[in-house]
Image (cartoon, rainbow over all chains, first blue to last red; front, side, top):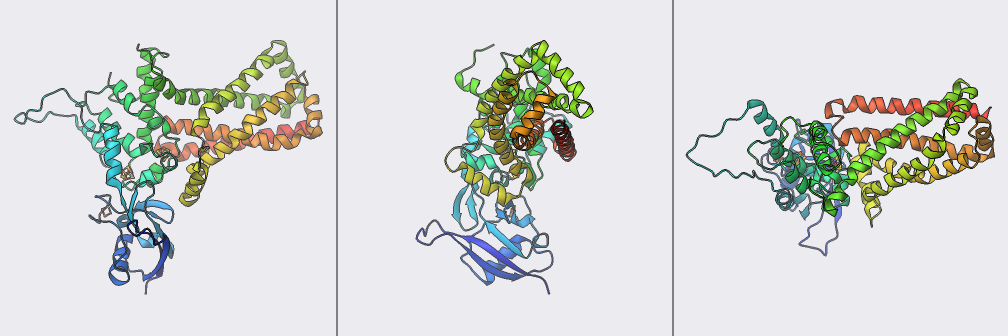
Length: 259
Length: 207
Ligand code: SF4
Ligand code: SF4
Ligand code: FES
């Protein structure tokens, strides 16, 4: 017989504001290879059909099942109960709009920061649907792919002390996203343009290097290494008038630095 | 070169924060080593003190460092959780997350405040009783300053060590792969400085 797991789950439905937020307890027998996703579905099927939470892919790809697990943000489908103690406390991700119980709306938040950082390729070239796709160096393509692995689960934002305190902070995920365009040769923006987008306290300078984002990312994206590169780029750009150009270029420290 | 707008000048603050922090860190490291020379012999420390006074280094460096501390604090304070509710949110967050790096930031904020006031007391105590000699320090410690230093010294070392680690991480000089090893180096470094500082205090106490 498996362990008996006790779940303490945050319950609140914004559509029923007269019912106070509360923690509700459920117990469940652990089965082999049980993930939180399986456990939550079991609870919903067998004990409480009103429990709200999100999931879709069950494989860590869609990023919809992010929640705070015993204080630490993570993906429910990626978390096995065998790695957790007998008592498991679940909260919805903070920062994002609460839809109900464990379900939050990360979409609006990500769309909003995507707009702020202009998260698309800026090019003057006219798109020719007939033309063959341009070739790209394999190593560079891999580098870009590496930065594009974010599934927008929001765990890094929820784990970030700065994002918790300052709601305009764009978070590590957005800075990582911009790093992707920064190294993409098809994007015509230069360091000054990127600086204009993230060179302030709501952007890269808001980050206090607390590293929690990096520690919780379920896709293990080295978020902080990217933040470091972008911060260096923005800092060097901010002191443009003080430091001579040849030193500036050396300091920027990104392989495919644009002019 | 384009002139920068006020918003852009504001964004330079991060650079100045790191720059002034790095200068102060270098200063603290040198200062503690020079002070630590008392462990070898008070004669050496007296010689260094005398020499620094003669060439006016002590008289110039002290106010400059105080100004730098004020400047560094003023810039860094924009990040401190002083706005309504921020400290509570951050403390609760850090406790729930049980993340060492997040918790260390609270340590940074606390030690920053101790250093801000402590540095003024320290400089006042030392400079108002020139010349710089071990004997004068000995008297001061016995006058009750020992209590002040048992708080001020660890706070300064902690703030310097964590601050240097954070500059390294924030500017991508310490990558994810090397973070563990750097963290160990910094802790060992802070430990060594703390031991040196304690030995120096003990030596001066029993002068
Ligand atoms: S390193 Fe920066 S972005 Fe990441 S959690 Fe800390 S403050 Fe937030
Ligand atoms: S960077 Fe990682 S933690 Fe943040 S949203 Fe993307 S996948 Fe999630
Ligand atoms: S359900 Fe898609 S990431 Fe968990």
